[in-house]
Length: 146
Image 1 (spheres, rainbow, N blue to C red):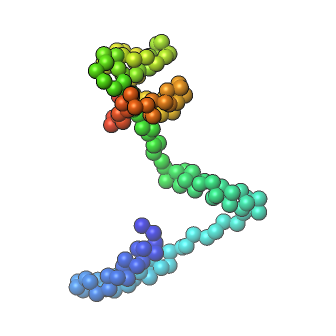
Image 2 (image 1 turned 90 degrees about the vertical axis):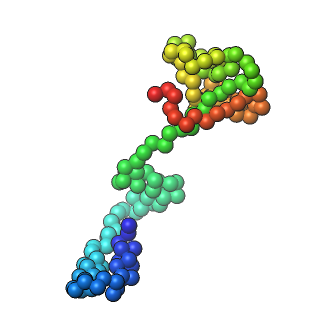
Image 3 (image 1 turned 60 degrees about the vertical axis):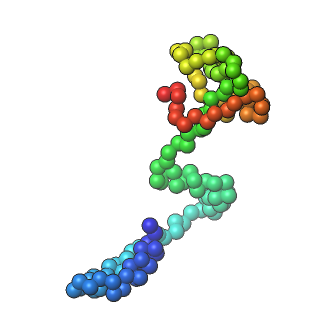
């Protein structure tokens, strides 16, 4: 919550509390809030100001907020890729030992990755699967490779 929002919130509460002295405490609290130091702009050289303006135009504020407030890494969506129809070997997997993609029939293989990101598929020239009517793409709700 921002300071101005907090001040507005407590100004609206005038006369709400019936307890003795509550209104006086509210007024003192508001006075204290209004006296809090407002952040003062930092003086910087012109070259730094130009750099900051350039970064503002390029979403640098997201970097700044992440640096100040912490961040979470947005996980890329993962997908199962299957050939449509009643085909035995219909699941596209990546064999970590073989270092290649292939189709298999079950989730029983070791050292195999069953779900893939769009970036991984496109890097391996499998980007076409997202537009192919004979392929079923299923978004994975959980990480199957953990």
